[in-house]
Image (cartoon, rainbow, N blue to C red; front, side, top):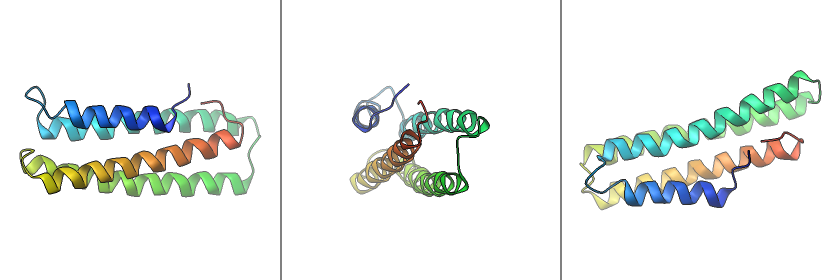
Length: 125
């Protein structure tokens, strides 16, 4: 399955836009946004691990994947922190909301970088 950046960003944007309505709390919005991305990353890493088991990877590729994954982890931690701040304001602070949106988009960018790297190695995602 392929997750293009536009689809990922659209899903996150929709979540941030529509989940802030009366049916979703800021806490739920933050959780949904970050957990959706986490599933994409975990799926991609499972595919990479299966690919690696066939002996098609090099040490340099493994290190590149590790580095890209660590960048995602840092971006995800920042998004979680920004989501916690956003949630603690009850969704009423526009600065916290903007910071959360920026952190979430940054996290999505690191995911797309990781996915593009895996695809460049021939991993089917």
